[in-house]
Length: 376
Image (cartoon, rainbow, N blue to C red; front, side, top):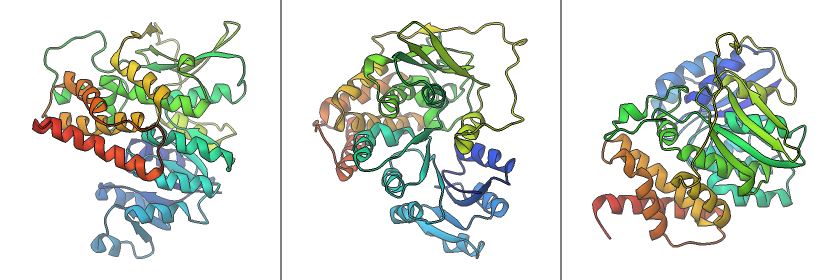
């Protein structure tokens, strides 16, 4: 039986992971769950799955008293302690942002099995994580549907690759151009049910920019080998083109339980009762090439070329700007423009250590604040 740790159990990925585990209780034990703020849902999860350990960001004695048999961890040190749990077998990283990057690195050093949903970890820490391969033999199991699809293909045929294609639904504004976009409009994703931040990233396509950077590190591919196609039906999640012109693709109903189930049971496949593709109801599968001069695509490719502080600032600036948009303080069409201005303002550094990653991340957030306040 695998002892599973879920960092981000109250988010979309965490809830879906627990749903998968709920149906396979004979195979998985929930050892530890972690959340940031949603204590109401977190309480229910603790009551149902009875983890030995739990994590919340700030110490809360009253909350802790309700679960006397659970050992609680808090803050940055708590995340490192969780990574060092001897009983921990399988770690799901699903807390947004770079907060869990040190814990992720600790898991690699401790030879834990890692499943990754948090894009920011590889976007900001990809260089450091790649350097760890010199001393540690590890595999990252991707949960994102696009990377999971590519992983499933390349695991069994990883040579003679011409290009991979990550698919994108196109978000709520595909084929539309509205003068004014409200927050609720941007949050109305036509296919996926996700957290607010990633839903906005999907609308701006910055989510796909980060996925390109992530794919670079996951699969050791050049920027020329990674492409994106718009696929509104979101049935095909990733495709690989080989040098002989042959394509392989992986598809499933747009439901995150599919990739989560795959990584939890990897390298085996197990029967599920999830909804299946009904070809009698699918009239079209459409694909459209993205514009090569799209700002998000240009930024993604530049991040792969430059590395260093560039992707860190890109991620940090985007994170802060999205917060402003969700608060209704900036126009939707200004999101990427502000990110570009921050990239111009922040001094570039070619190689970062872990401490510097957090420095440049916070610097980017502060530069967004300065721009919003009208400071030079």
